Length: 291
Image (cartoon, rainbow, N blue to C red; front, side, top):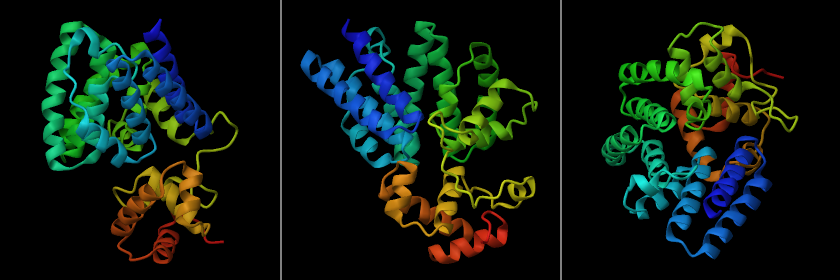
């Protein structure tokens, strides 16, 4: 069963990425692309490439994914498009949104509309939830937080019954921040699971690389500048440990290019010009401890 084999390998790669196991990701991707090539079926290669693009996004590296997205032009056919765990058109939408650039966001609007129409025709509730979450993320990227929260509220209610977590996890920490803005009851199970995913220990026994210098008090949470993401806090903690960009990239399993992008955002948000001043400013704000 070729489709089952493709989805099994794609699922293994994605799960390994979410478990922060880069060696397993690499092995699964190699098997996936080899198998897709051996089947000599174009749709299989599209699905394998889409999986690779999704993994790049999960690593926080949008550029390789964007290169794939710009070259992907397969027709969207409901009978074949939505068969996969890694749906090419869905991942193309994810990439357009993640880029944050105006022209790609316009592409995302058109693609999102088309995919929603297909999802309604297929009566696929999970696909619909994925698309509604991505719609909320698109609105957020366009600066329409009110629309993003309105779209997200009803989606959370529908997803809660099915226990569907992945649609709220793969967009990254920004989704945890939006969930927080919804002001769900403290005991809300889905909200807790989303927040726990970004804060909890990894199954391998280590912790998500927030670093021991990160402060964890409620006062700190209120003191941090608006817009400073969890990943940027991760990097601040590692800067305070005097790690170089290559070491930070290795610790967080992202590219050095992505580290540089995050550093630019950190410098802008903290209004500083270099890494030493960023650490000093973070200490003043209580974001990292001085030791």
